[in-house]
Amino acid sequence: MSATVITGIGELVTNDPAREGLVGLVTDAAVVIEGSRVAWVGPAAEAPTADTHVDAGGRAVIPGFVDSHSHLVFAGDRAAEFAARMTGEPYTAGGIRTTVAATRAATDEQLTSHVARLVVEMRRQGTTTVEIKSGYGLSVVDEARSLAVARLFTDATTFLGAHVVPADTDPDAYVALVTGPMLDAAAPHARWIDVFCEEGAFSVDQARAVLAAGAAHGLRGRLHANQLTYGGGVLLAAELGLVAVDHCTFLSDADVEALSDSGTIATLLPGVEFSTRQPYPDARRLLDAGVRVALASDCNPGSCFTSSVPLCIALAVREMRMSPAEALHAATAVGAAALDRDDVGVLAPGKQADLVLLDAPSYLHLAYRPGVPLVTGVWQAGRPVL
Image (cartoon, rainbow, N blue to C red; front, side, top):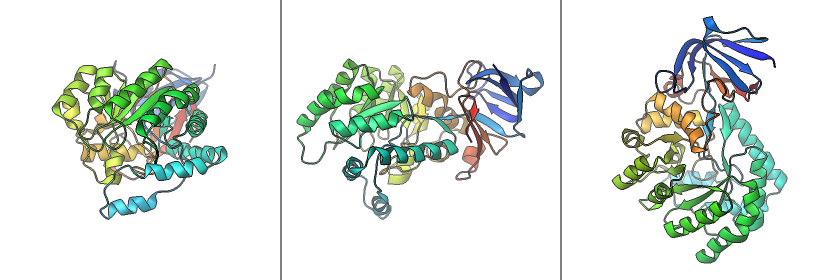
């Protein structure tokens, strides 16, 4: 098997817990790739020979971003809704139904083309692993086909039939549909099941029923919770020992304690607060309590139409009191953990060779230079894709 060595790395973020510091920095570094995997990491002066040599020119190299929360399968545009929010209209999640109508009307080819464009957009910004949810079909046929489209781009697919209750539909009847025929149709295309457990969406009891039905079909559970107000979703996630619970904007002391005790990851989505003018989650409070925090984009057409994890890192540092190291770690290694993955988000021997070259001497520039397109190269599974 041929090997490639990347040298001239001014600063390498490994996230390797065997190395010193949260992000396992190596300066004047080199990485050797064999096939799709990292074969060696260390000081450039000690790098083994390889068939192919790439000079990073003093640039920083980081693991590819792991975006553990996105909603890419949709049609339509909600820019007017965004404009209304920016002039004072509050976000209530009601616009989801607008996207549902457009998504149902779109062809499979149109949905696939749209997801492909967004995945390429993400890759250009350094995302090498992405989770994709359904949730804009809300019918048996449309949820199943949304997941089939998502599966063309990632193995991390999530069934979110319990996003909102469709208009003119009885909530109990809809939960029965989600946990019955819709789940039967969706499960072959999904690995995870999710519920929007929130006032105006699904109650704690309804979320519990949906997650239990998903588990019976072999789907791992996750939750949208405590985005719009205080509620019981985070406590439910901790009680069930879910891998991750997402949003976590409004947290009581009991919520924080439960997350710390359970080990459930709190996935924070600062692009949402940027796009809705809601309060930002208090990442510092969570980290100081020993809660693992991930960062993801929540790319969706309504509350957060950004695919940029670098933007989310900058927002987390500026608005959520995370250090640059904590934010990068959250968007890589902890994002991977939120998808129950340990082979991505880390650059160490045996891990998947997903890495990003930054046109900067240090990863600190991700927050130091917000909005600047710093990603100058992307390797995915050992192959340059940008």
